[in-house]
Length: 110
Image (cartoon, rainbow, N blue to C red; front, side, top):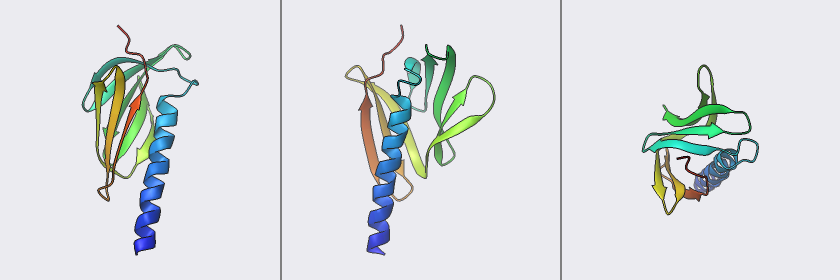
């Protein structure tokens, strides 16, 4: 049981870093249009499209302006976004109670 818990926590950290890689990716070069504790509106100058990142049920999902979504991080209990020190701060609590937090240097669009 202890091994399972340790592996679960390691997997959560790996998944959290994968989520950060997506948000900070040069593939999109996101800019933050609007941010509140439950979602962020993003713009990609690469694709010239708007996106949203938000919690939906037990996942953080990336959605386009219209249909569909991509699960970016699963198995979460709560996700929060805030602006802190000129960065986007993401705070996540996983279903097993594990907490992860990170600062992403993503520009805020005026």
